[in-house]
Image 1: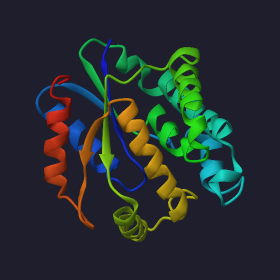
Image 2: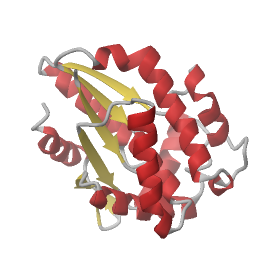
Image 3: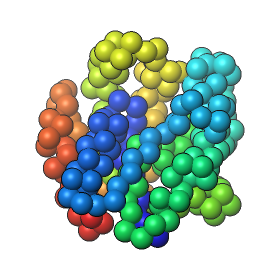
Image 4: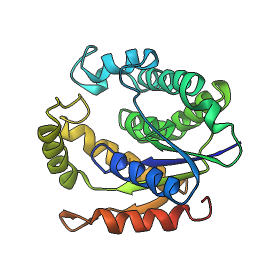
Amino acid sequence: MGKLIVIEGIDGSGKGTQSRRLTEYLTGIGMNALRVDFPRYGTKGAILTEGYLAGELGDDPSLTNAYAASLFFAMDRYWSFRTEWGSFYKKENSIVTCDRYTTANALHQCSKLEKKEWEPFLSWLWDTEYVKLGLPKPDKIVFLDMKPSVILNLIDRRSESEKRQKDIHEHNAAYLEKCYEASLYVAEKCSWEHIMCYEGDSPRSMDDIFSDILRAVRDIV
């Protein structure tokens, strides 16, 4: 069985850039590495997720309750594991790097709940995806801590450069603030590798952040 490394954080924290960079680094040093990003846009397993993020159930994320939304994303992961990356992961000495994973449900969906509901929800989430669905548990979770005030500027620039519309999470500043609060709680509770990605009101350099990521995963690679 291989290893699973997850790069996690709220929208705009740099997960995609750093997960690509980590996969390229691992491949470059001769390791058998594969990158998977979620949601898996354009695949059968992501149909419900795409509809939700496009606002087909309403522009406000809170209109879709935490448990229902979690199942949308969980089915995307289950489908992709069965049809895309599961066989690779099951090989000896393989490493799968994920941009988002089950952990993303923890951040995003806790934000829709009262704090007293967070622990019961997390217990349900881990049991649903890792036990009931049989998805692999991560061997390492790296949390990229980027505060919302910095992220909102990054999201605006990314949306403009990629010529794509923001999803219902990205254009909702209040929602991102709640996700950030939840992310700090979950990262500490679950002992994720915590990497600060900003200094004051500016993001740290990608190179410096990547160096921290390499230190965080050195026991895996």
